[in-house]
Amino acid sequence: MNIIYEDREIEGERLELTDKEGNYYLGPNLTLRRCTVVTRVSARWLHILPTRLIDCTVEVKQELKNFAWVRAALKSCRFTGRMASCDFGPWRDYKEGWENGAVEDCDFTEARLSNCRFHGCDMRSLRLPPWPCFTILDPIGRLRELNSVQWPDQFGRIIIKNFYKHPPSTVALTYHAPTVAKQYDTTEAELRAVVEKFDFIVY
Image: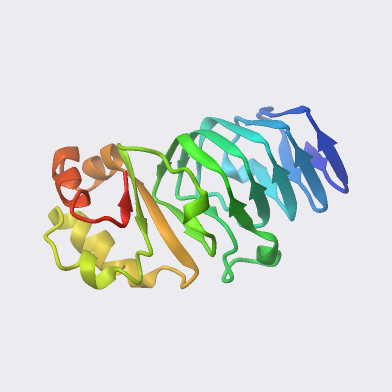
């Protein structure tokens, strides 16, 4: 069942994107102002076409994995819940509609971001999740510095050394330390010890 919000402006409403049999489309030509958007579906059933979210709260009730917000213009929005391998902001290498993407003045402090990327945005305008999340600013430009220290072995070899493979539009990468520790055979304490060495890592 396709549930489509398009070609209109909605203000001050609560959108429940929670029906397991629903296939949700936001956009094109949709503007949400001061709305609460609640999602409880997988990325497979959620589609964001060119859409503007302004002063909205986005509540992710089921972990959202491998999802691109890159066709959404997000301004002064607040995010809560768990997101993994998600992309925010204008990603030039993404499919048609990427040029509509933006993320500005948004608050992620109550979100858990794991392996998420930010593209083509001013990170100074964003409030980022605190430890146990950590955000590496300008990861491609800082690659030499990042490689100058000893990271936990697998994370250093598999993740850090390959930052150059990310799209050039990547301006920041956010990780969740407990998830990294589990995946790459290390500990949160070992990660924190290295993270604290850099003033361009936010935690």
